[in-house]
Length: 250
Image (cartoon, rainbow, N blue to C red; front, side):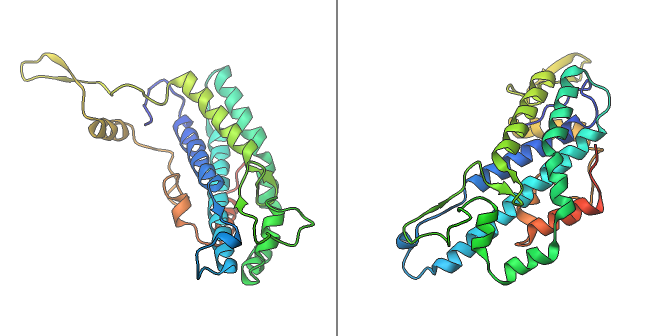
């Protein structure tokens, strides 16, 4: 749970939220699995199972991409801060610059064709899941996703997630964004005395989030809480369309 402090520069919480969202989406992407054809349940068509896996990969890589591009935008908006914060901002900007190339070179017609032709093998080659010179997965070969999976066929997810984790750790060390103890709230009794109230975790979360409204939210942008669930099978196209409509810059 994020803990709000008045000394934290504006924009840092939104930056941390998108970094955390990228990590969550990345974990979901790395968790995608497909059993070998020989091990599939009776009645399960291998082609259909593989197509389902590719759709899941597309959704998760789009969520990672969108969160990181939003984090890049938030980092560009942060003002003030000390040397530690500036280090985080440079880290985010530098490690996400290659994603801007993905936005610039993205071809929506080609992506749509990939779905229409069900060319899942080509998709897996571009992402580095199978070797370029391999026709496809063998009957006894399971599909597993590793850190070398390339988001959009361009940037390895492992490096992006390492960057997000490092940046988030630095922000937490500097500003104590994530509370480990219960939230403590002071109030005044009927007699005018100052008392200390320790609410239940659910109440504390409500107090923390309601006390400091998110003035940086963008109503038309996918947020960290729903990016992975609202994006369609053509989610990479949807994410890049969002970025193109509101260009990220540093």
